[in-house]
Image (cartoon, rainbow, N blue to C red; front, side, top):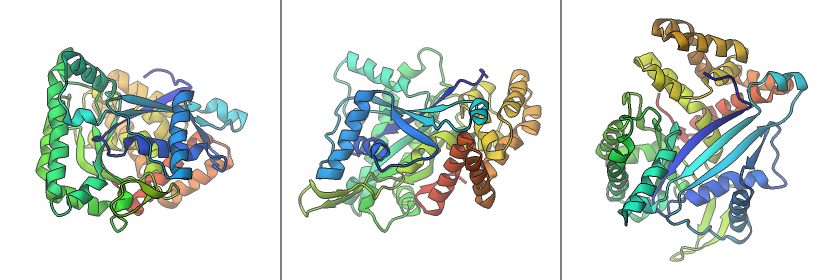
Length: 397
């Protein structure tokens, strides 16, 4: 493992058909953090491209001030790049922390490519190149459009089978291109979360209601999708599809009967968006620990999972960043699995097990000492745990 950079990057890939709400979601993820009234004592969220940030904030302001829904981005693959910049804190703590900035690359895959065949060899190549750019993501969100679930009430299986089948066919069309150079992929999203977009349309639902509907109506289609992804990757046992679910809503939309244009958009009533950063940062480590406890995973696959695991584990256990990093690097060089399992894995597992009053106390202590990195990561863990308790997020047990 390389020496700590002052910047660390996380990637998340978002897939959804046209109209499923991808542009609205990313606008509502970023927009509230730019309001003058927004306060965060640990970090600032900044768009790395000024023009891109202005467009997202413009979308958000249009929803907030004039109930205007952003225009769909058709046939455009976009990567939104954000920086989570830690506050300076005390000088000693600032020097000791391994990085000052967490970057999030939010990859938006064009929805039209789900349903439309490539119109030319050039477009097929563009789709392959776009998909290859997503491979650094550990986590992918596959959006289930809440409006379409309503449109197909009592026959939801028709929509779900179409959604999952179209995405599987899209992967199969790209298979030869993806595997052409080096065979099965080491880097690939291995955690696929099924996300109900426009969850505000179902005020009585919690995440278990959504999960139960999907399993009841489309369990075989989920398994077919899992088999399709498994054909693309090395160590397919290290793969989660249909095991994690989340409710997402960018705002509360008030509609007139028969009119698709909202008469009011309450941007304060968001669901699930505050869990995006914690999911991208922590869920890969949680899953890595689970998989390594269950099976032997090749070193190169382990190294592609949960980049920064040592930093996160140190933050969540109170250990020193450098000491845990040195321990992990020591066993990574020897490739002695027995030693790794005996000495390192328990420390990673302990990091993911910390919860409740202990975790809250660690967060309070980190804040009191201006250790903003440890405070941010422990807050992420608190937020994930709260998301589960609020029944907005359901993760693999």
